[in-house]
Each structure stands twice: as structure tokens, then as C-alpha cells.
Image (cartoon, helix red, strand yellow):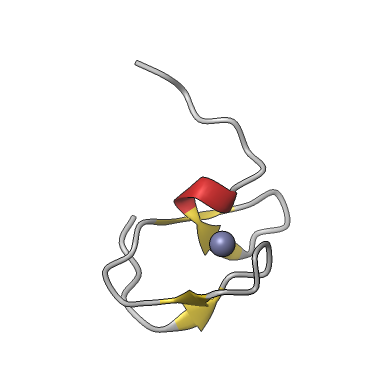
Length: 43
Ligand SMILES: [Zn+2]
């Protein structure tokens, strides 16, 4: 989903800006889509 508020990615430590694609990792923390440790289903 897209971030609706500013936050911080615990994986890379960078800021998560509103509108960025984010996902929850295995610890239920919001991280950048690219930083997730959960494999995504590929089409
Ligand atoms: Zn990140």
C-alpha cells in the first residue's frame, strides 16, 4: 500500500515519505516495499 504518513523504515533506516509504496515485514513493522523480508508473489 502507499504510505499515508511519514515514518522510518527499520530495515534501511531511511525516511518513509507519504505516497511511497510500503509493506509490513515479518515483525509487523512498516518498511519500504523493496526492504521487506517477505517474498512477494510474482505474477
Ligand atoms: Zn527501507
